[in-house]
Amino acid sequence: MPITPAPAVSRACDVLRILAATPTRRFSVSELSRLTGMARATCDAVLLALSDGGLVVRRDDRLYELGPRCISLGDAARAANSLLEIASSAADGLARRMGSCVAVSVADGDETRVADVADYSPPFAITIRVGQAVPMRPPFGAVFVAWAHHERIERWLEEPSLDESARVRYRSALADVRRRGFSVTVNTDRDLPGLLEAFSQSAGDDEARPSAEELFEEMVRSHHLPSHQPSHLDDNLSMRINQLSAPIFGSDRSVVASIMILGPNREMPGAEIDALGELVVSTADHVTRSIGGRRPVGEPWLDPR
Image 1 (cartoon, rainbow, N blue to C red):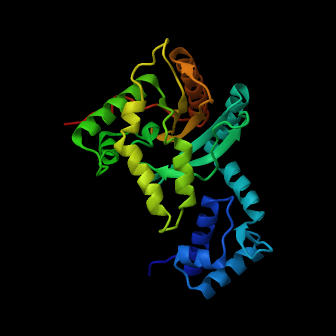
Image 2 (cartoon, rainbow, N blue to C red; image 1 turned 90 degrees about the vertical axis):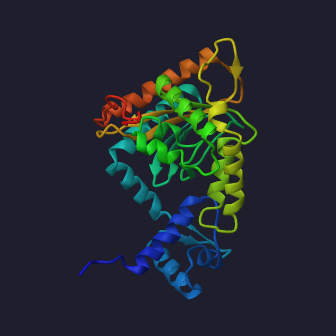
Image 3 (cartoon, helix red, strand yellow; image 1 turned 60 degrees about the vertical axis):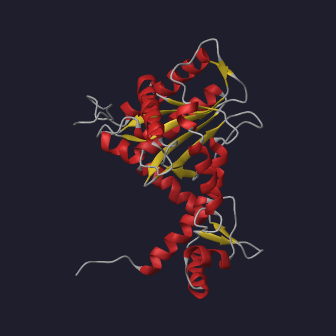
């Protein structure tokens, strides 16, 4: 007889996922009941059990947030995951050296999620938080998709709002990412941190999700990646970048994570962006070697037909 997941444990996981998606926000029982689809009494019972275990805390205002036991669990998970431990250490070193905010991102199902952040940036600089995520749909996730097999790239390009001409531009943009070894997006009115925050605030909330989806669709319609993923970085042309990411490869030669540095609040000439890209690629390659990873051989992204 097949074993099925325990419903109570599944419900507890749902609550923890919602709290983890927005760690700076507190939730009432009614909100968590609505977001998880649990009955109010059931949600109360789940929260009581999590509270007894130190995984959630109920504040004086009767709102819940993650508890201190989650810190030790996170530390244990980091110790058990050599990739995250090594990548986080490398990101911290890069952030210290550059005085910037550097993140480790991982693929989490159909999303890319921030797994760790090292922030040594100056006041008012662009920053992001652990747990923030966006759908892995164009224009996002390019660094995870560029070195993938042809079939995976085609799935990424199945975004309904893209016409064939846009798909051609995206394929060209991915080729540029592979050629340089890193992805870079320049500043726009609708930037990456803003979208990350929009999706974080809408985590599990069917009412808030449409506004985040509208922001995402706006960026897709503007062809954010092809238009702002320059194929050539002119040494004499300055631009302000949102982020620059380089891939970390696993033992199976797939991209298992990325090192992402957020751009400074100033314009940078093309030569400086290239130099920064080389530094981030070098950091990511160090992590790849440290975990026994390998770069892809051949050109798996080409159509085999």
